Image (cartoon, helix red, strand yellow):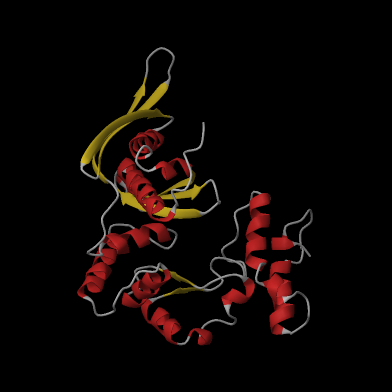
Length: 302
């Protein structure tokens, strides 16, 4: 057997499925309880070393192994979790997840808010307003199933005591193809408020999104050095209505992470304008980083 079933031949037994079945279901001494609690971590480590994306559908250790979706279903899970999960996810180092979708209601919001450590009351008018906001965003094309960081930011922004670390005022994204050598140059210019100060920065990049990213970093890093440790790992674009052609609404998903500890998070933006959708996901990522990434180190040297 191999970890994640990865091997030089097909048909390898996946130890991430075999071992917990032997240990938990059949009570065989296949692995110690402590070792079993590191199974999900081991699966993710091997996938990272092999440069393969972990399968969310993988039993026991996948992101979707203990995922729940749907408002009434989630509400029931919160009351009687053991009735909806065949084992305690913690036994294999995993944890339950709630997928936020248009099927969800206040039950999903309460569960996710609790997961994020945010105190939300079921009958609070703010909670009802939050649910309406989420429904409206999903109607416009947003999907939070793969973007927990954006979902957390939506919740936090509805809280009366939340103060954003920065506020975007304007941005300009230009792409120019220069005659002669055929070089394509992209430039991003932003105007952002940090505290009582307005910062106006510009940067060139290998595309309009990269240029806006660099311009935003130029404004934020002097005030928030931890942003220098945040890197963009993945950028995905999905066309929601292919029949609409170039008029279609686009959904952008950005995966970012802290280069110091490997922690990653995903954010989403949605708009008929791909640059605006990209900016929304990028801004969410940076704002989330300022909440989660500690400021205990100087910016990395280039």
